[in-house]
Image (cartoon, rainbow, N blue to C red; front, side, top):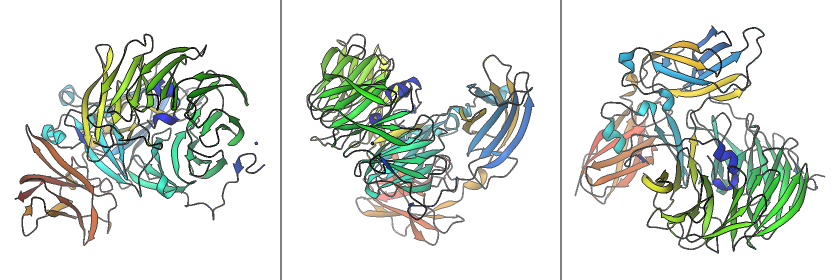
Length: 637
């Protein structure tokens, strides 16, 4: 799930992406340039060499089963390139890959949408076990850090996990970025995460399996929004400071630059033809890009300071922030024809169409209103009063919800009966004290909930549909201001025609029955043997106790000696926390600095006296927070 300002709203709502469901105390913490094309740079101009994808070692298979309707070949690979061949490990991410072919012709069976069931063999051993496929992972972006949480599957039904969950045991890693992120998107396989870094004019690419930086790509000035094209071949990056787009090949990470116009850019794709549309806020135009040719077709004049945009049924809707209007264009082939202008409200910032494409919504930032209109007739339906500075829009069931920036709330309205509308208090602090043109208030649809991150308080407010209306239910608190989230949906993905893949992290050792189910066909079953891979990890990190006790309010250096094959780890994280029933939780999760001689450390101040717990984690070592022993830290006044 990426930024709500640069995605096609119907595509986003047609395929809900699960996020997480933790408890209240779960912590997560039109020639060259004239035609719009700048030639691809040669190797000397490229910012970095090609990346080498993180190795995935085959630990099971290939194993073949000939079914009545399909021939299946199964392989399991570990994200740990040092994993032992022939043994599927516990506690590590593995890739389950199934190739389905016609048993008579050998042709690959594409587009089947199979499901994969997996369970421990034996009723007794399975009674308290969770389905490993239930597990899912969420990235929480805050400044220059990405916090990783896991939920479901292997995080359930473990001895002593009640307290562990309360103090943040679901926070499994922290990914450190060179500087703050602006936006992020996943590739189609959910293997790599593309992240824009405006301060360094880069996109960094993170391996979602290992949480390591796989590559850094130089793009244009001040990259902001980015989006994966429907084919999955390229990620498009909007360079707000350069008036360009950078297309990054998702396989090779080669780049190509397309000139558009000046100003801030939002992106949307047509869902019925190979076109992309980009707003140019300072040029008062929308650029139309042909995706197959990676070439600009035209710059189309719209209103003053175009910002957000959306597309449905060969019509493009553009919100013009400078004059409070929505320009509607008819898109036929490569031709854009003006249809009408809808009068919305002052500061029309975002426009989104509901999943049916029949109702449009416009957030009017300066008018503090939400405009609903009929997308077929373009007639106004209703203007709804919102909180201060309404911005990001999502659709949730039959409701539209807009996030307000200058008041600590969100506003909703029912699409079928707009008289059903209200404000929902999300916090006691607004996102902004005064308007900021470059700031965007974001909402994220996540399956059966909407997530509203708050970069000031660090809270993630969750909204559910209760009693027929959206309601805030509970909050999650991050260790720093959460700005946006990205969820790695744990679903079966067709990575190539007839090749289906899913990530699984096994909870426990034992024999598993894996069944591949295709509608209308007989199921195909495999047996997997999973071995424990955790016993050797327990003593890899040791807390170094200082000669004198730590004192309240004084700088305290928490130091761990880590037995690692590398001289210096780059992803070490130290977590320090104190949980007092009835009084809440104090916690710090900080990237560890290498101090030499296998020692890693952080500096912090303790708020009060007592016993604290400290752990060291490193995804590179395979030492996750839940695997790491908890050491006691004593603090005196």
